[in-house]
Image 1 (cartoon, helix red, strand yellow):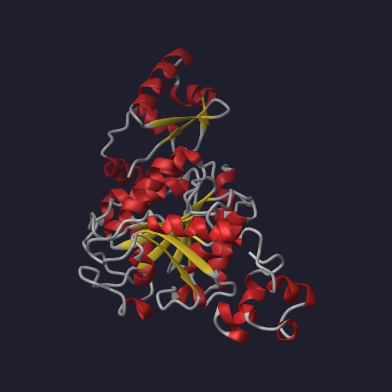
Image 2 (cartoon, rainbow, N blue to C red; image 1 turned 90 degrees about the vertical axis):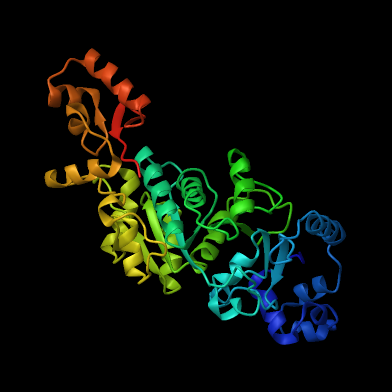
Length: 400
């Protein structure tokens, strides 16, 4: 809260003087050896917002509930000095000074086997592995279906899905993870947000955020009351990638913020995975760029699990039933994909293929008149087999 003192300078001060109280007890001359004179003077004064922020945080903590199993408040905050602070975050270049947690607070420690043992209580006997899922905020209907199916498959395999609560893929990944939750006593998903934990952004995800508190964990490095500032969302991405063994990019344009998370994951020595898509889709070009740079191509959840050398516990559905994501399959693959979705496609569904297609193109492919096609397309859309896209395009939807 001290003006001008960011994470980097704060870490220097903590390294030099130890605990925060020791920093504020230092004379100006001692502080000048570590930070600028202006910062040293600022550290001698109490910030204007300090008392109100302290009161807000205290009231927020008091409003939490006690977990019957762990005996912990479901609202806590961790500092760098806390033994439960995730080692995976300590190892990154810019670890958050403070983490605010709401939900299954034990979950964040269980992602770090090094620190989990000291704090784990029955039935929390096993450390967890995290998998990050990110995407653009304007995904295709197929991208949303893929995210939901992958999120569900990952939690069924015992992974924790880590994402950012954003519109689109983030929300679908969290939803899928909670649907696949195997043990209601254990968290299955973590939402790392770019606001204070007393605010939900986007507001459309208010109900989803409440469900995550019950079935997973909400995490933020920002003080309570922090509004949705644009700069904070890319900043939180380093936490998403650090809490995970790998990052799966479901859909991404070339300049998508998802690529920031992928880059950070790569810099942190984590695996990067990408789902390929149509060569005509701008929402797939970021994934294709990652694949060219060495990301692992993913067609099913099984691909990720095998790359991470994780066993399926409990077993997922057989590989033949795991969602395939190739939006441009070879002709001999189409039968396998339709078996997966339990949908018996008619001639029109086959003619749609897996790329967005216009009504005129379908007229040419099928030989049917436009009026007949529109009626049939509406039936398929109501049945969830086809999605209508901007620009008068249609796309087949493969469900998980």
